[in-house]
Length: 424
Ligand code: HOZ
Image (cartoon, rainbow, N blue to C red; front, top):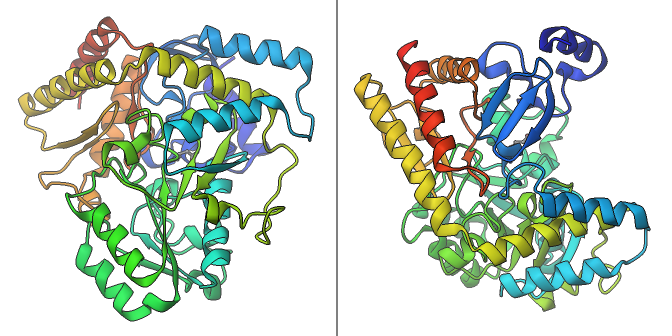
């Protein structure tokens, strides 16, 4: 089977030939690969070409592909039933793991994706405060819910889709967008709309305009101004939960959001999201309270056991220091390769996630992220792919490392990157 033939067939059957836009490799040129299998740090396409994988399914696979403990947990559970549509005891175990890892989360509701988590969290914030406005930051991406697709990052930014056809103006106008890391704009928007703002939703470390770190004082300013005006803080940790530390970005930056959205690593690669927060707020969720949200597959036992197996192994290994060392080895050598070839760049890194921007400007918000030379990124991506290194097929995303990546993987990847960059 050939990638190209299969992709032609896929295009006739699915919009763009994909189930999610960024997979079409549209912004980087060239045809996408069709995956056959993956294990550890490696992935193979249907032509049996092997890649060292730094995409890692966009973040969930902190233990690498097909980790034996996760696979075994899924297999064992599958024999006992794939879905019950009733509460299973694994939900209670995972809820205990989540609430003890993140002290700000006293109660949690499991859903099936990060998008569902953020959509539900916004509804909860509006229901709790009885207010309508949501503040979000330019270039942050919180899934594809109507209120959150305004000035969004990720595929919306990558494909340059301006507004969002399908989202009525009346709904879009309830989302107030300001630049990331801009404390004055934040204070200004609260001065103007403060009494009507339900919440501020933020990626504590942005991962969907590429990796962008919060400036000192930015997250603190969000907490202060929301407290002053009685609005809630929703921390979107779908990428950062269990990635930056056991307790996510909120542990690292000592933050106490009102609601936290989770996903990705939480489900170890199975479809799983969650939102949780202070008891008093979560008690507004049905059936305890009046804010309705439901799902036939919510709390699905396969996702639960995959999440439990992933978090158990992660907590046992506590690999954060080692992951950071390996990631720094990759980013510092990658930066040297680019510098030797005279290619302007900035690498924004935290823990085991990072983004390479082809620019000579520091990247601290979406405007500065957009100074990256995207045609260079496309050439870089394609050259890496030819050499057998898979990275996100989009500028405004993050590379991820896992515990399955070794020093040898990084050495081989750097040799391939060196060859690829020479060919640019
Ligand atoms: N940035 C997205 C998730 N955080 C990429 C995945 C997708 O859109 O398919």
